[in-house]
Image (cartoon, rainbow, N blue to C red):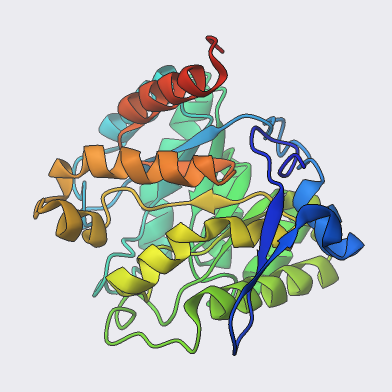
Length: 319
């Protein structure tokens, strides 16, 4: 069976239970509704064909992000970085004006708007063709970003921080990304606990997707992100990555953002975030091998090169 209309396929599926052992079933023995969600091709989002791997480049306009805080705090620097990402192969440029690193404090709405709007406007004036994403939890920021040229709303709170954000997305008719996070950036890494991290995250995303649909946002305009590193221990992150294909059962395209996260540094003994590019690329390729459609990356050039060679090596031909 072809997985989500993409580049992967499967013959069996693992049935996970909250209690008791899992069970491996042949694909044609799955309930028809479950199988339909797994195999149905994902509809292009904002003109982006999801039958091939895609890259979301990370553009933080913040002074304090965990990996690149301050590098793109000036509008001109951010504009040049966004153009470079597109040239390197980014299909989406994700612009954020509030750090969501562990321990980060909330940025006032006015300040966040001041950081992101000039960058989005500048990239549009410069002719950037890539889809611009607004990485924000706040309705007013998203409203300003969409008015400036953003075409996707990426909410790390999974639309739990500011309920008005749902109405902004619905009215603007832009796609959204709903992410799972346990707690907020200030508290999320203080002893996160789950009954079953895979099923707990899945249930949250399923509920939020249903809520967004009920609010008038079509399912084909929704990405799901399990939120690697957001209220998760190293063990939680690895459990999610090892079975990230589970989330195809949501019936929506998937996005993974693991780039330069702390667990990569722990495993690879790379204490500084800027030293974690190879590990980040490795995690991105592992996610793509399970059919994830979009990987979020700081290092767009290296990620794009790795994906091109991975695809050529798997298919035996140049894409």
